[in-house]
Length: 368
Image (cartoon, rainbow, N blue to C red; front, side, top):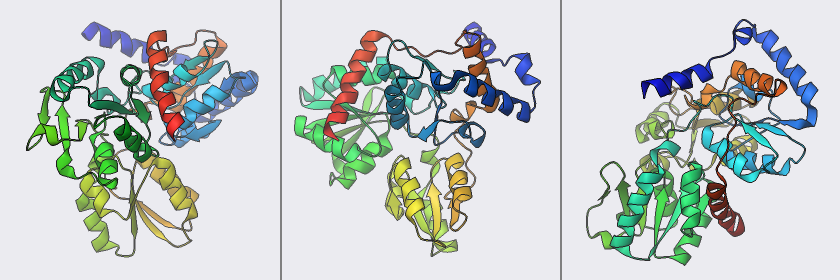
């Protein structure tokens, strides 16, 4: 294990030629490479990326939106995806075999996606079949690995986003009596409750103990929530909202539905990253907002909307650590590898996995 980690560390080390460059020199080189490659290069960047990376993006957005833009961009020979691993996987699944998808730093993972691995999921599914029979359908949040998306597709389920989770949960309950919702328990709980499903009809599946966390007869459970969470959003609490109410009674609180249920209930509004951005854009001047989502995005919204008072709901949180693995030096190193035709950190999803994952993605796209 130590050897594997050491090998990975060596692969992530920046070339000395880049380490010795100033920020200005790196920025100048990125601009040169972008100009040299032209339409052959496409750089999508997630909303949570640092400004030092976003400034060079050809498009910004959420994970699915960026993967779809990559799919539509037939001119691009190489997509340098500035996000995390599962996002680059989705882009590779949707793009053609002739297109390459690179991730500037392989350490840019997602703790939420990593909370559900395929072995745990298959074991869970076997137990669910024994417990409930053929009455359950799987849904997975787009923030999951290609293997989990493929599992869901293979078993008749679909992917969901935070924007369309309500529609997809409604669709799933028209197919079967119950849902297994992977891997974010908070999103599944918040959206299901918004649809009128009581909390006492939601059980939690603990993959570490291979057991249900539920008081009562498990046959009464309608939603089985995988015990996973976003390490950033879980730390926005109802106490944070209470403190805002006390210090700033005229301030609106808006949070992402990956936040705990108590936080979402205490907030004024909740919704996807796109919803949060749109709400702030459309809000009147001088309005005041406490936002419960990733810090890089909150800071960007502050800078973009100086006519409004914007703060983080929890100012003591760090930005997403894995998302922040993508930095200007690593972006430059990725671009340099295109010029040298080394194509460092190419993301490739095996064909059978990709085919089953596409089933899950297409079922979502067909129903939203």
